[in-house]
Length: 139
Image (cartoon, rainbow, N blue to C red; front, side, top):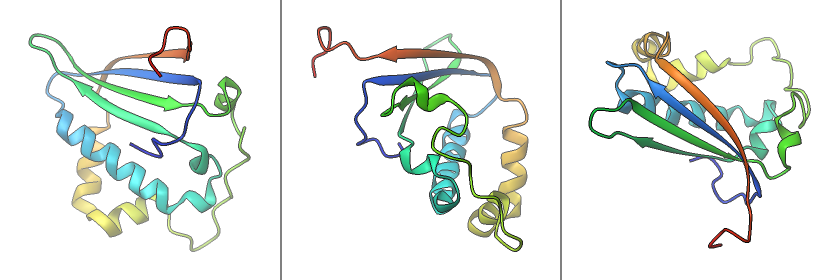
């Protein structure tokens, strides 16, 4: 999870069905690596300070591998608008890119495996926007 302590009453729920043959463990590893590197780069992207996501996977006999990501929208649905938190800082010449950070931390072979994994792992994706109803919540 990324900043799971952020409280919100609005949520974006992404349900991703992975294709057969895609390793859900490899997919989860890459999501975690992505968040670790994004954290390093947070000073160039103001959205990262306000981002809160939690991640689950589901696997039932005979079903697709399903990955569920819930994003807490502390500023409501308006925060889904592009550049709501401001534009990312343009890269300065010589500033390491995401790929540079990734290869430094995990190596070039891991980058190649990541590219292959993310080439087309998704069979189907669904997005739901939800709002907390305190009258129906146990919180």
